[in-house]
Image (tube, rainbow, N blue to C red; front, top):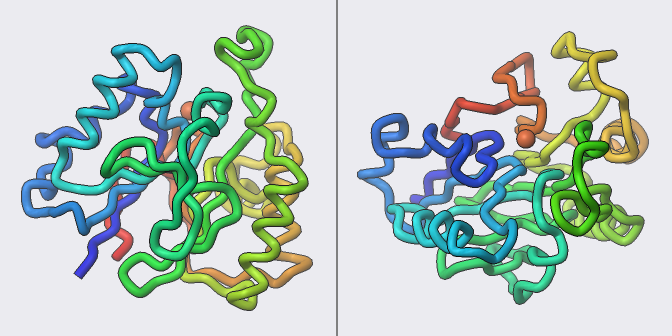
Amino acid sequence: MTRVFITGDTHSTIDWEKLNTKKFPIQKDLTKEDLVIIAGDFGGVWDGSKSDDYVLDSYDSRNFTTLFVDGNHENFDLLNSYPTEYFHGGKVHRIQDSVYHLMRGQVYDFGGKTFFAFGGARSTDRIYRKEGESWWPQEIPSDEDMAEADANLARVNYKVNYVITHCCPKKALFELSRYGLYEPDKVNTFFDHLIEDEGLSFDKWFFGHYHEDLRVGKWNMLYQTVEEII
Ligand SMILES: [Fe+2]
């Protein structure tokens, strides 16, 4: 039986302590059949240097398979250069033998449950960053990404068990009492469109980005928490 866990942003090694053996001891009992998902700002594909190798090899050596949606702090030029494969019913970039990027708009079957993944978010610290070195315009999903999401969700009648994203709908920010703290962008609005106009239904929605751990109803804002989904 596949077990699936999820946590928030790891930012390369900066925030990856939550997945070490002390803070996430259950990993001793896991196998490569089990999945740990990082809800964006993975940061392990950053500059192709030895420090990337260190991060990726470390995840590859764990007792689980590592999956991540893209956040805003990712090197999209590098990420998109990896081969595209099919994994559990949806497209992924295979980064290492057991490290995969869940691509935007895909629907996967993990452990008999449906998961919709859609990364991307606007960087609020963009003015401090340089295009092509520490910031990439692809952080904001394209019309093609959104069309891919619509096509794949239509196949499952806009009904999934779990949604995994980096940012979240405005509706979630409102219900988590965080509305107004962040300027809404195209990605937030797209998620609201999926719910309100397309009738997307889901059991739980998990996301990172805001660097806070908060849960209200179906909304799960993750940062340091590692949550078992199934
Ligand atoms: Fe982040």
